[in-house]
Length: 256
Image 1 (tube, rainbow, N blue to C red):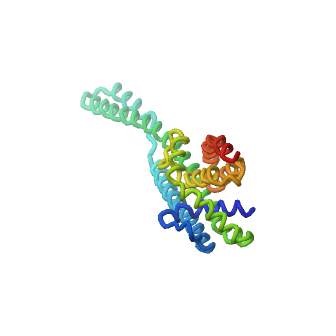
Image 2: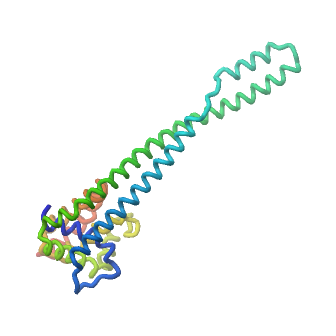
Image 3: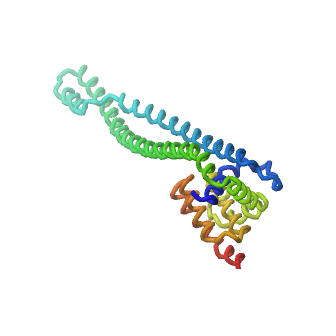
């Protein structure tokens, strides 16, 4: 991993924790940034693991209920009606017919229940797939947190810290302007509705596009997309690319 990519990741993972107590004249120590990055990653991983385990518990409970249901004899209604027609005793015919009606209603309920059960099974399979993805993301975040000390140790630490701080500064010093622009560009997705990691990727990248002309436009956009792939989802990477491409022309004109 190159120095600037490591720095961008560090800036992303610490941005939310530095807002509110940011001193533009005092860059934080690298150890502080590393601690905050690891804390952010582990917090996200814990939340995803907790949600995933809760989802698995709900799915297990629902599957247990489905397995406990007793099957109904399919010929019960027909047999009762046959006996009612055959019997010569009025006293027996009426109870048999009433029993047949009860069984018929139960059979109809069972038919409806069968459809509901199939729908429930389909939803449970969908939930299992979603939960698997959630747990996979949590595992990847845990792995990323474990990688961080090694990544930065192998980089030139002062350069990593300084570039990360520059990224954070570009956004926080221009936060209102950047958030307003993102609100306009991200159609149907206000800043508040975005996933927090996607929002911070866009904030840092737009700060870089508009306030750091030394970075080529295509590099800034590509690096943001790679961050989304690493810390979010494929859909997020497409979303990030689309939003930032909206500002590419303005960024190019600033550089010229």
